[in-house]
Length: 222
Image 1 (cartoon, helix red, strand yellow):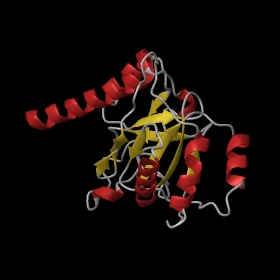
Image 2 (image 1 turned 60 degrees about the horizontal axis):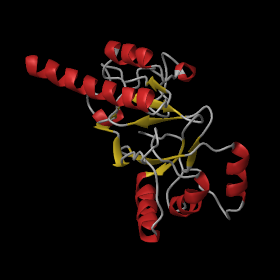
Image 3 (image 1 turned 60 degrees about the vertical axis):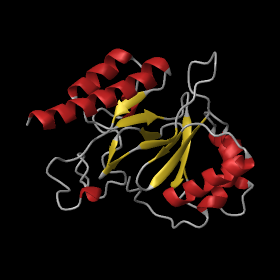
């Protein structure tokens, strides 16, 4: 029992530390995710039931629930209270303020990163879950995004945009049977306070091309 409790405390401390880094150091607004139903998913941990208990929940466990997304904050006192009270809750970043994101299926995202590397394109922080990859980017307006997508011949609906009113899960959050992880860790340039982020225009063409081979779907199954 001591060993199990020790592991839980260590995991909780890790999530609290990550949440405080986002909020206090980088001024990124965060909020706890819903987490998982402790009585669900015993047969298949990859399909754990969300604590919100919606049978059709599109992002089980890793969406804001109580409190909701509007409660996202970079106040370290609130963040410390949340993860001290609920140490295993996923870490959710509210997008559209200082940071936004674009996400796509895991295989497509992996191919896109290979293309960026070959072209020498610098990307910012990149998060992987068991099924998807999210690239964090500088904030973008819907008008800017619309103009960029309008230039594309076809845009896959498996590509998703996390701007104002959206969110993404951040490491080391529990996600299904695994964890969210950094594929590209946040890098803070000299003299800067928060991690460097590319503009969405820098990455969108490659993401669209990579996403055209992936099936569309409504359930993100993080």
